[in-house]
Length: 254
Ligand code: ADP
Ligand code: MG
Image (cartoon, rainbow, N blue to C red; front, side):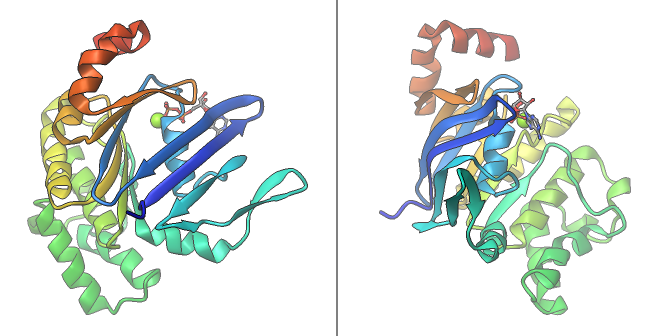
């Protein structure tokens, strides 16, 4: 089957530091990959590279079999067709640790904005889509509230609904619960789990091992820009205990 996403030998450096060092990853539609690993290991940079919020130094990214269009010019990697980036970004939703909601817009306006301005969807239709996504994450009763009046968990669920309103084919979550008080983590994971059960393809960076076990098809451990280990959750958490680096990381976050 044609993979939804293929990363081949992705490298991203900042100065002399290789933040992402030769990463390969293939995702089939419907798969869920959880990435764990210590702070500074390159997890966010990798997600940002997939969404082309960072341009990579070398390697290639294919989405639905199409190369996103990097090419080498005088030893530097540049994007061939900037138009492709806009299209790709509409197909990949991203949810960050800090919700980045538009503060001057209500929850539903947040979820309509991209549909109207980027996809050119008429307002009435955008509103209906936004409302259905808010329902999905249990936020429809907060549609007319402003972000400042919401709890962290509600803000994050609104941010998820906003991303979903663009009808993405892939969702990227970068530590979606790490800025939340512990009692608010569950409601956000429940929303993501629901999405997973609906068949969404997703990559989730999280330190929550229970959640990783519950939703992941694959768990990947990242360190110093590389994937040290990859496996199905049960294998991963049993076998990886033999690797002292991974075990010590897991011990520290439990
Ligand atoms: P993680 O998300 O795993 O904590 P990051 O991807 O944020 O790791 O960072 C990986 C490495 O790249 C870190 O050493 C970080 O300091 C560095 N880095 C990330 N973004 C930048 C940037 N814009 N400029 C310089 N260095 C960066
Ligand atoms: Mg990060």
